[in-house]
Image (cartoon, rainbow, N blue to C red; front, side, top):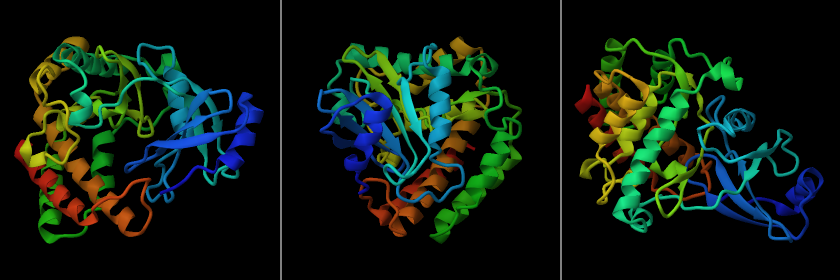
Length: 330
């Protein structure tokens, strides 16, 4: 696990934000991506510090400056994000670039047990609030918030297919399923619109209140401009996934949460989007996650985990199940 060297970070926080020693740090999110720590100073003030994993293997991934730019652009808008406080692109203080934001109080529903702490009415409100945040993001004018040069929206889906097809390795059955999915996705490329994307929009990437309100949307490291329905497909992949994908984070299957169809209907009502090709985007989401899972497997096998332990052999099985689920939609 990557620890946060508060002995070196503390003087930086003191000089930049006026925080006072002693400092403590606790890992609150590691998983398979950027690491997030709650840092508390001697006066009890708290901030969130985000840094990349120990080893970055995909060019452009885990870009702290990019995430800081997104948060700065969206803070104060209809999309709820933590207030960005500081960016350090110099790796000297902690061994990597890092981002400091306000620490937002609330819960993160990472599993069924966490979601069960909300009553059914709060769950229903939360499900619709989640879609409303996605609608707010996709309706945001990139030029109005200074993000009109973010990414390359033209050909977004085709580039995604090329990028993730490059990590198809490993078990023969999984590889063949992914290649078959790749052929189907390339053959059926839809005409698409362009909007600001989150890139990893799902239930366990928001901070919520006990009544089902969303206080902040987290994890903007993959944000860009591209086809907005890829965000919706990604959300629905994780929403009530069923026993065949039971390894995905649970919670949305509990009583009170809206169905996937209700989420899609609310999204269409809020954006006016034509969801006639929604199955394509659900298939793309499952295929992309299968490819990402193979990349995560390879990263952990190389010893470059991101703050947690993972059953690497299990990742092969998960990738195969996701690749099969993708084909079921295509």
